[in-house]
Picture 1 (tube, rainbow, N blue to C red):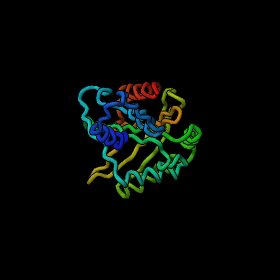
Picture 2 (cartoon, rainbow, N blue to C red):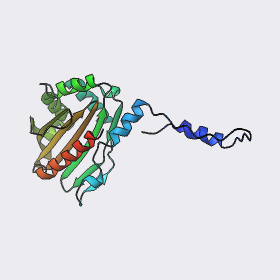
Picture 3 (cartoon, one colour):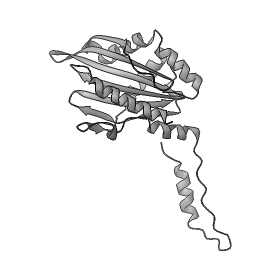
Picture 4 (spheres, one colour):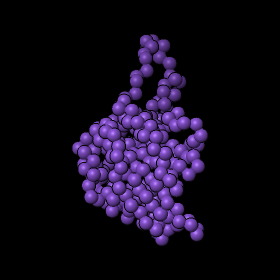
Length: 222
């Protein structure tokens, strides 16, 4: 995420030294580590304000320690790569319009073999029960019911999967139905996740498809 601060400090120190007989030399171009390259790439694979039509508000995604713990639990339950092994983990901004909500995230795993194993886990039998168990743990008695099922998605990158989570949740004296469409787009070691949520109705389908195509185009460029 950040490029070596020590390089800046060394450059500042060098400015105070003059060697009159030494010929001028050009500054060496810093060599980025693989992890830094992965972070740079991941930053290009999330949705940005310009990808959305007018009327959506954008806020910085606020990740909590509880969120990170839930991610670790879900990965362990499903059998996916542990977050501790990610070489990049980048959140896009959160976008809201009325009750509709969008989030995107890109992670990069250490090897293509790990990515293939994650794909097998996403298409396996553990995803739905693990995901629903996490929802029950997080919402407690506020969760009335929840289902998770596959929805269709075009082929993007090496693989693309999509699921719809439908949850009935208590809010005061009311019970609200929340719809979350969750997409996974994979290419090489990169794994892009997108969530399109809405309350009371599913997320607008045409906009959802358009934004998924934009994410796929970003993934294709890497």
